[in-house]
Amino acid sequence: MKQINKKATKILIILSLLLLAAVGMTIAYYNSMKKFENEFSVNAPGVAVYEKFDPSDLWVPGEEKSKEVLFKNTGEQDMLLRFSYKIEWVLPEGKGTPPKSAEEVVTLHWNIGDGNEKGEDKEAFAAGKLTDIPIDFTKVTQDGRNGINTDYYYYNKILKAGEATDWVLESVKFAKDISNDEHGYDYSNLQINLTITGETVLADSAAVTDQWKNLPQITAEINPQTGEVKWSTATSN
Image (cartoon, rainbow, N blue to C red; front, side, top):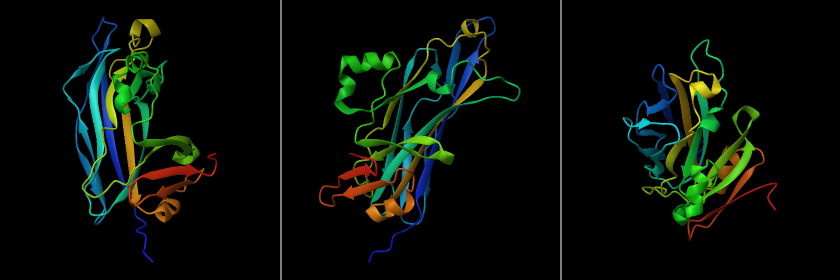
């Protein structure tokens, strides 16, 4: 019987966005603080997350900027992948909570395949209403961080050694109504963290049950011939 490696590989990428507002102006500029590739591996398994993004580019309210993110299996074993994300303000000491939540300020444009070329999808994204699931992923809401419901995105394929996903994230858009005058709040020099957390286990259904114990419990039906993975939960119909 094959022994399951009970260590999961986790990758974290943090996009820190700095809001800069000139004195006397109501428009804030958004600027990424840094760009990096981060790889974390345990023995033979290893998965890297890659980002294509211009960290020197300035962001203005209402503007969409390209920011592409993908996962790659850099190890020697086939893996199963899931990821989650969190968007949150990082406030300096003594700074009150902004009128708008970080989730309201930032809209993520996932790669949804051919649907990205449809005009209605682009219009929906421009209006901040596009919530599609990334191509080749299944979205499951589970009991995640400290008992808080978290949306996990499960990859519908085996992530084979040396292979990568398609671009998961394509671009980021900022709300156009961030203004010190409009909200009576000083948005100058605030920071937003977008944290994408990727997790992997060996491509084995027993490993999923053993390691990903969120509620409802997720299960994986793996087709070794096609490499496809069907995800389901105890509450699935």
